[in-house]
Image 1 (cartoon, rainbow, N blue to C red):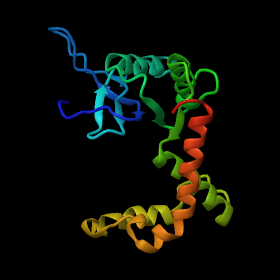
Image 2 (image 1 turned 90 degrees about the vertical axis):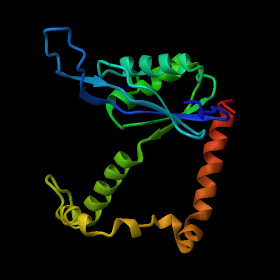
Image 3 (image 1 turned 180 degrees about the vertical axis):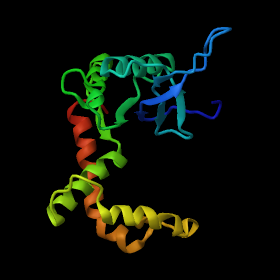
Image 4 (image 1 turned 135 degrees about the vertical axis):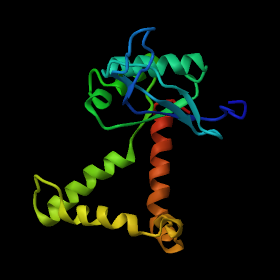
Length: 190
């Protein structure tokens, strides 16, 4: 925590998780799973865990928990983006955590749905377009899952580390960055 330097603009990440509370009183064994919300900010070095409060699993509960942590850490003025699961409790147009958190912050922020979940949606759509709709597990993904442990992971490098891939996506990458900055400027966020 002493190395945490919240300069510049930050993105707040949250992701609900069920975990045992373990705070039962003497003589009781309260180990029932409850909803918690790990909240992290990134954009400064190092990233910082703000807290893991209990929530009820609703958009309102999550927005209030994130906002309370941002206020406690005095980060509410510098948060410019949200990273979150693509669940209705987060993305709902009226009672989703993102909409409610923007209201609490009194400004629009850049919404960055969690890439892992977004990629699952995209991959499913691409598969459906190429191979037809599937209601069960997709066998090619199942085969990949089974082969994954055999991959020499220390030698794994993301595609973006390859100069040819960097060159191929550079123009698109620059356009996306310019678009995001423009959206923040238009909403007077930077």
